[in-house]
Image (cartoon, rainbow, N blue to C red; front, side):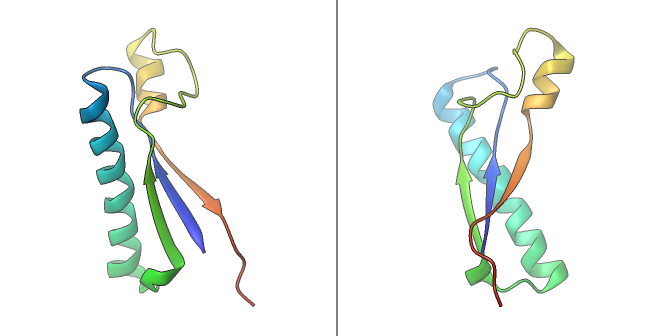
Length: 78
């Protein structure tokens, strides 16, 4: 099972960023299901908005680094 986490920079309202991050993770999940036939039960999604930046949101380049998707392995299948 894989958790797909969406993240954003800090531009905009927090509520909007939370939705954007969840939509971002959902789009990746949908792509994996549609294009690579990954079983839906193997994919979980979460949106964190601007809560966990990789770097400070102090430049356009750094904000771009914070707009990302992260994959975390939750459970390995046999």
